[in-house]
Length: 402
Ligand code: HEM
View 1 (tube, protein in one colour):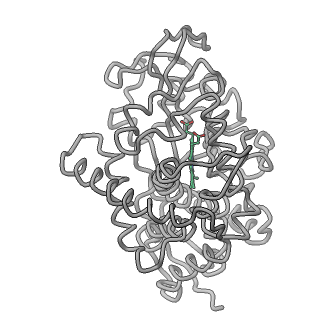
View 2: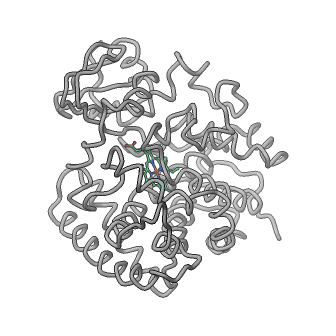
């Protein structure tokens, strides 16, 4: 069989059988339309995310025109410095103490809109509004500015997903970027020297070895957060709920034993990775299991395939929160065995925040909704090439009164 075309309708409809073909028969190949080599086996994708021979310079064309130079593109000492300065606000204890109550209140507010109805289209009524509200709350934006923030957020995301290069989407994205930059810059400046509970205040006052983040670095990071921590969380929540409802015995067990939540979430992220692909560029020739990748070459690393590699996970196409080959204690740290958050030095800095917000949302939803089932009697499919998840999730349930 030919090497799979990642832009083909068959791939976009269901990449998993084609991932298997890639792993078995084409563990390294050049994809002409993408002008990049493709990696799909677990060991090769892990190597590409952890070895210094693979850089993140690919983001220079993908993200820099929108956000400027951000942490994702940095390497070496510059990258390590920013990671150290950003680390504290993203620790779980900080997230829980500073933002836990606001995140739970936001979830409950959204649920109040449909709680008593017994049916909901969860993507439209909860998931699409949840992470954007969490981001606005933790950045400390005043509630009256939230609608404006949502407009910017949507325009930035549409820019990022504008594969066909629609000029109107490009124009709107760049103008949202400028407006958000102008909005955030004075807020950051006002926080300098005034420690506070919002993330912007924490970043403006975090210091390691006498060094601080510059205003420019904080503004760019704020925008990167919107970019990296919005739709990824939406996809995670949508696939997690879909996977649980599709496996009622595991959902029932989770209700009985809520302490299994992080185990179930870790398995959901392995089974249906929200981010299917991350790019890399080689700085020298590298040996992988399928052969040699030349220097200065773009490489597409398929996390979605690596997480289903039968060389690493037993019966990888089964959703099983009790699987022995996934350590849920480490699943949200750089020592994770699944690759949904990447690995190595660029391992997702928002992993603990994502875990926290998804677990809070799922806890609130499960308490409000009992006997959850698919309104259309079948699990909805995933859509999307690089970010995948259901675009609609119609559920019926028995309302639980408080
Ligand atoms: C479940 C949701 C999320 C998923 C699946 C996810 C996935 C990822 C992946 C795969 C990477 C590695 C990219 C690469 O190596 O090229 C990454 C990096 C990153 N993520 Fe996340 N992410 C999520 C949530 C978040 C959140 C909530 C934030 C912040 C608010 C965030 C901020 C970042 C940043 C800043 C990086 C770059 C880190 C660096 O370069 O050192 N992510 N994420």
